[in-house]
Length: 290
Image (cartoon, rainbow, N blue to C red; front, top):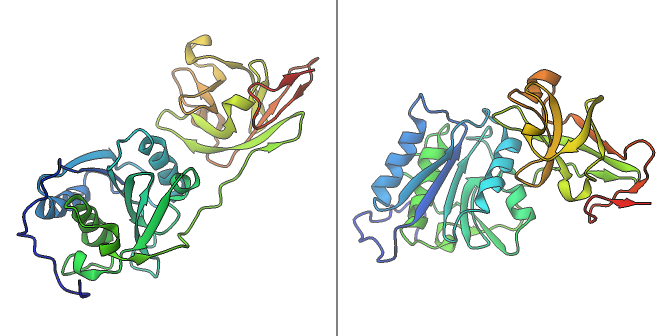
């Protein structure tokens, strides 16, 4: 389709089952920004279903958005269209992209938001959204979520192919994600994400942590790894393996982030209990007792 030509929106909907679009943004809900995107989608693909993952990402926090997107995307069915817009570089030279990754579709700014999804992908292809005929006729320099990304997601829902939306791109921006360090005697990692409850979720896989290992966060001893929050009294700090399979530090009925005064990037350390020796390995569940 020639650049600048607007697609005929009166064309009939495809006969396939209605597509599903899932929204993630840092727009909040009080200013109507998500509703603007929903309106654009409805004008192009009125039969598509639109769900909200969240609009409460901290403004401009691409790292957290990438974490949250990867957290829920793996539970979505094939064909789901993820419209994820956390875009501190809106209006700049950063690219707008769409991708097909393991049978699902993603429409995002090219700022690293797809890093975690791409890292774990078996198959992927990415295009730059440079076919302007699939943008709104007037594109604001400050609201590409409404004028570029929402239309792209809607046209995908209408059956437009990824290749029609733009040209292939083989160098999407990727975030630098810290990896846990193993030294045989323990593991050194960091807090990767702080959830709504103030739980500090680390980059240390639970399979690598022995059940009676000792955990320290930001220099403070937490104690042995517990099975669940109810294993300690209310208000107590604890370490456990969370629902994502990663080591986390929490406070029962409270916020570990508030109690400890830490955020993403805080150091987390796992060591063997006194009197025991373990060989910690990224592939070994619980380490090896010697």
